[in-house]
Length: 305
Image (cartoon, rainbow, N blue to C red; front, side, top):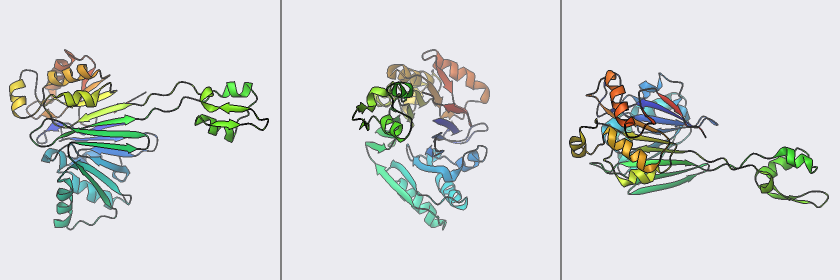
């Protein structure tokens, strides 16, 4: 899995930061999941190798403009660029009205269908190799965090051990790799599970919308390989962060500690901060959670096993 930050700012665009948008790319098949779509997200995509027609799912954390104003334009351009496969948009109640009204008023006609999944409180999806959960956070309007869990994969087939007992490579190996039990021509019964190495643990990525510190964030991020948490304010601004339903660098880091994550990436940085302030903000979070990095537009993170 590869994460790309297309926008890492809060509220409005800044000189070096666009507003929020994050992609999760599945490296095996190239499919893209988009998390939030702030204004000018499609412009940001032009500076990457990402293809809008490869976007299959769009997950919206909440309906503030800096997280959704880029949607109508991106959806229209996806059609112009040859996208014909359906897109599913997940998000709070109201996202369908926003998209359909925007497309209707602008008389935008898409060459593909949009499916909508609006939810309240929580969401649970079983999507083949992945499970996606969403839960309500603590923001001024309904805002959600997403936990993306890759299912564990079977271990590697121990081909050498099979050859030792006379099993030759071929279609039978494919069956055994699934853990199936088969019978050989001589009547020997072989349990595929006995010839598989240790299972490959699936990866976990947690992407949170705007929020105050909350135990819901801890639950969503539990043992995640990567937690992406907003840090709109620096560590000395907890009062104002609370007032505006946001988090500070220290608060994001405390969530990472409580959740026992492997890596924290802080994002949604206030436009009051200049590019030169980034090391200062990153260091604040590292005071509590050392394995912290700060997001910048076009930064990529490969989430490895």
